[in-house]
Image 1 (cartoon, one colour):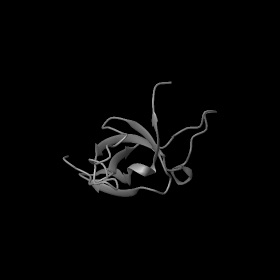
Image 2 (cartoon, rainbow, N blue to C red):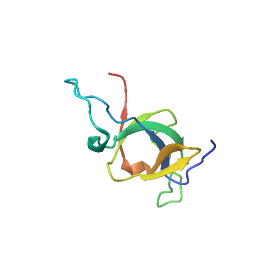
Image 3 (cartoon, helix red, strand yellow):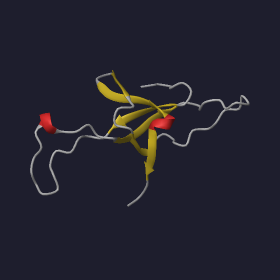
Length: 97
């Protein structure tokens, strides 16, 4: 898949929803929450500031990020589900443990 987001947009592949709680209970599909974590698949070039200079993005392809719950637009390509969101809607990059 070749996909190039425009401006400050980022394409993310969402992580799978939890299948089981920490205590061992299985979660039915109807009760699963949408994950707010995923891997960055593609990154735009960044937006322009007031002086016309491009502001580079804080994330790169391969980063695992935390994003806003209702900030992403969902879409499918070749049967795979992805999210597209603005760079401002990414709250954090997940680093080691």
